[in-house]
Length: 511
Image (cartoon, one colour):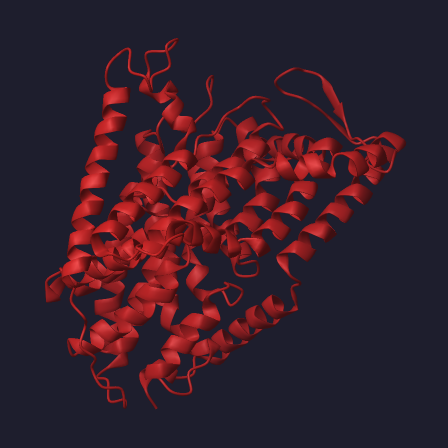
């Protein structure tokens, strides 16, 4: 029996079977938010009836639970549903970003760039190139899963290596390193919006910019690349042995003349866009500077990341399309935008119910009360910064096994943990960074992750009879290594007192 299909130990099998069973019985995330919203309504009435309250540590005022089953509460539920949806912070940022990325994807820019990264690398760096390309592909959502994972299997087979190792390396980069990136993607404004909504429970007006975790995540890109390479070459590939399957190596198609010209045009567009931003930011009176503040961190650009993603995707996608002649058809750009938004139907449904839940939770004051009570308990426990952060990363990783969507989980967890850690002095940006570490590291062993069946189908091409346990057992070494290594980086970051992103300190002022 091939190593890739060996049964795991009975204890591990029982655990994985339990995870699979629990994941399968969970309803759709939208239904989960409906249930959470209903539970919040009921809980608010009970909390009000028993007089649940807490003293706000910032204002000294007593905050009392508000019943959503009261006359005023019912009126708010009925009259504010549309407002809750349209004002939900992540909604506009994600949709605007996806319009631009749709052009870049439709033109072929993203796929060609990924192929270039892999094909231009020396053979001894193929593994690192695959993992790195996987991490960077997260800028454009599902492109890494659909394009890079199967491509990596074909590349490894073409150079005489086990194709399953290539699939594992790509999957580890795309999904295990989901939050790491040297570029900003749709996940950044999405999570930042949820974090900002949660921070308002404690401090109204607190702003979280989409680049708030950029420094930490950029460095994490290289850490994940290193760890993914080591696990692939030292653990996974030796365990797989030699490939003796029926698949024959395919020729990896080099870039065509049109594709190379398209990349050159895209590079020129990148330089032009960067020069325009630099010209508007560097001079003291630059058009992109805040006239009332000399700091670059207060520049309007820091609040316009989704717009920049949109502009970058459109301009670079068009430049590539003109050079590669892939967007010559009339209306191709609009079709690309429409296709990108067409994939967001499920997300819009999810956001509608998530927005209602978040609004109900805020109106009820339960989030603030739980945060105050939880902070008091944590403060009394005497745990230091390191144990608290490790515990939160582990909790995020555990929840991810049963609920695959990063945004859905954060929409549930942020209203509780962001205020709780704010009351202990931790910045919302640091809490978000810790969540992203935990959320990413168990993606590759989570049966509820939406692309798990797709990766399993790629695996079956080279390892017939592969099942869920096959893929999970293949990816566990990555998951464990990423969890330990990435958490260690987070702890080192905190101990060194480094900001996690532009204008994003580790602790709130006065702590």
